Length: 344
Image (cartoon, rainbow, N blue to C red; front, side):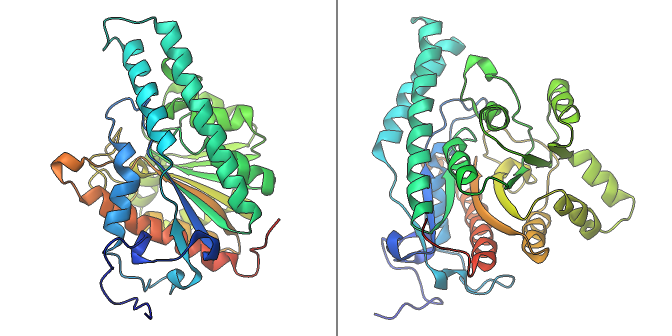
């Protein structure tokens, strides 16, 4: 049967209604339903499934990037081990936070870290395997702890890459709550455990003084465009495109995008784990992604995390926004990758 991009998605179809085997796809998405260390609400483990379901309502012709689906986009089935690691780590986190009346807290922290290490190793090996096959790889979380292994694998393949980090939070805490692999420590771990050369934060608005000091003392390896600065720029009447150009100028030729959905206005993601007033509009975020490609740079990999849902409440809005943002990430990545994809 000939695929009709304008027709309804078939029952049981893959991401965006496609039915492309991962080996035949140009872009492979890895779902990670893990949210054990979430500080405010644990529902981001449902994010990959919510995005998958909502993606069947996305029109596949994109006004900016054309026909990204034609290159082939496949989402892998979730690894059942991840659900077990998440359950074990969640129980341990509850013990540390006092939700459980019994249990040794030091042992519980060790168990949480053990589960995080298992997850990181699996994500790293899975990402590396698909990169070696010449695929673009994106990760769909889960909370923001989940892409560490994905970033590690991309840095091995693209050692000069920069990271565009779109987020309400800096995530530069050292072992937040005592958990080495906390969602609030992802960028601390990337900076201190990996050879990341450039980290550009966009949208920060709920950030510790110590985190801003880390950025200020980084010698230019980290740069922050806070939500306050973005709003001040807009209120002064300056065009957003001028600020986007300034952001893009900080990035090298190869760009990895780590996109926490709470970098957006929380009206677009009200159920995310740690929502904060302010944030980018959907068009502002996609303009930034488009400007990467427009500048001649390329998105060589990405993660989209902290999209939350609750199957019991039949909430669909967050998944809807997440699916459309994911398609934009796929489209801009694929458009910039033409002629560059090749097996290792």
